[in-house]
Structure formats: structure tokens, C-alpha cells
Figure 1: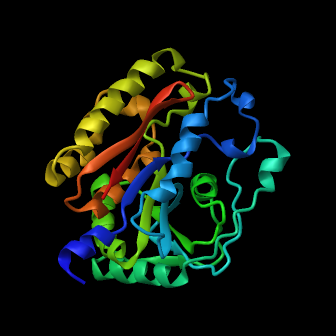
Figure 2 (figure 1 turned 30 degrees about the horizontal axis):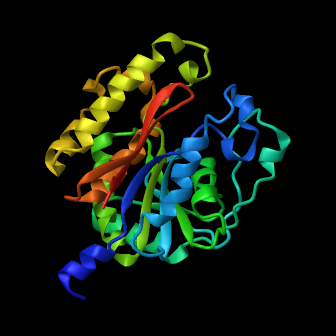
Length: 278
């Protein structure tokens, strides 16, 4: 395969917003604004058209899984993990029965350990809502082998960029790398329990910084992401950064690829973006 052909066939690396709880599986009027999820739903449904061909597998780095060291799901038939609370009973019956990607999980471990990361596997863990909520829209047939990789406790942004760099070869093996989080994640403000009056302006300022930061060349992009706490309203938008860290992994896997922001909307009143590389 020639270099140009190889590059054109490379899978993208994507950071996406997965929204609030099990939102696609319930009446959106429960969130106080009917239709508020329409744009996010349309973006996620169209996401399957982003790769140049159907992926051989999907690797998700979800904001909802942290472990002492990078840990992969290795179940052949992953169960469901309903890691949300106080939602309607029917949302705990949702099924997204994608097969596990056992061989990809093993390759993830090999690549990470080759790069100096000690790793673990979890044969019992199921798909958390950072995976099954968005992918139930993107791949409703649930027919693409899928595995998850945890974040690493401590949430060091530089370390997560390094982790992404180690995973970059997967993109040439047909693996679609998805970081699932939110570019704004202050739950108190989103639920109106604190800071809601400032949420729009703070999230807009952070979103503008994010768009400018990821649009730079790779070295500048990575430096800015490592120093994300210097961004306008950084801690107001991310009191804890676990929903931003999947972006660091994706940016590391991006290499020199340019960024695009195909989704920039307001979700529950906050400015939120998706970032695509490749």
C-alpha cells in the first residue's frame, strides 16, 4: 500500500460530547427544554460517516472510567454498566450489545507497555454510558467490536497525551479511536445548583480557547492542552478534569493531523464542542 493510500485509509481520532446521562433513551422534556438534544443527536448519528470506511473496531476512552494504570476491557461479550443515578426505570433496561474487541484490547496493552506504561485488563467490566449512550446513536446495529480504555488516576494531561501517542498506530489498523467526555462539565451549573448565571459566558470563553488551541500545529496544541488550567474560566468549566482528559488522549493519537470542530452547540445552556483529527 502506498503512503498516500495508507494515509487516506487511516481512521480518524475523535473527541465527542456524550451529553447528560441516558438522554437519548428518555423524553427530553425531562431536561426542561424539549428539543435541546436534537443537534447532538444529529451529530452523533452522522459520526459513522466520518471514517473513510467502516472501522474494524472502536476504542473508546471514556470519562467514566479511571484506574491506577491504563486498563482495557477484555470481555468478549461486555455487559452493560448503568453508571448513572435517579433516571427513569426504562433507562436501566437499555441494551447496546456490541461484541468486545479482545484482540484490539491486547494490542492496546502491547503498544502501551512498549511505550513504558504498565497496564491491566478487566474481563468483567461493561460498557459505561460514556460509550453506549453516544454509540447507540452512531452504531445502532451494535455490530462493530468495541473496547474501552480507562483514564489513569491522577489525571495528568501530559501523561494522557503520551498515552495517546502510543495508541496512534491503531489508526492504521482500522481502529476508530473515540474520546468520550464533555468540553464543559460543571454539574452544579448544568443542573442549576450553582453558578448557572455565569455558565454561558464562562463556557463560551473556554470553548473559544479550546477551538484556538486545538487548531494550532501539534507541538503548540499539546503545550496548550497540557496547560489547560491557564485557559479562561478553566476550573469554572471543569472543577474536575476527567471529562476533558479523553481529549488529551485523542490529541496525542492525532500526531500532526489538523483539527476540525464539526459540532459547536449549546448543551443544557453551556457551549460544547467536538474535535476531530484526521
